[in-house]
Image (cartoon, rainbow, N blue to C red):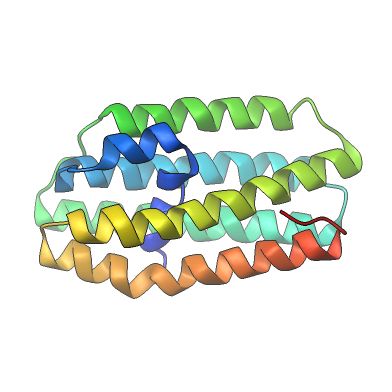
Length: 174
């Protein structure tokens, strides 16, 4: 269950996605959660293959594992609740911006790649925490979905702190 919140990570990463998420239904939130996880899984897979620093590769592997777990948890929950994820402008924006990020990452190598990936992960996780606090948790109408989002929020905080530690060790700030 701790991974369910991870699904939301991408929501606030992109301002256009956040604005659209205001007033989202539970079915739309479910789609946003799945898409947000897929976005971070895709970036993590690229980083696992291309990162030069072992600690960046390890972090990327953690992101792939955790976000894959979130998608499974989220899918299990919506299946049990009989909620069909509904595509929406926010999930579409997340997918588009995620594709752009992966395309950019694929043009980079070495230290430039590592820095770009880690910087994106710091911003992404901070925005997800903000989305959880300001949009997703207050917007979820199903009590189980809301409780799950609240319960897994600390995992996002842990990912953010891990990414900030990596960022600091690479000699870069915000």
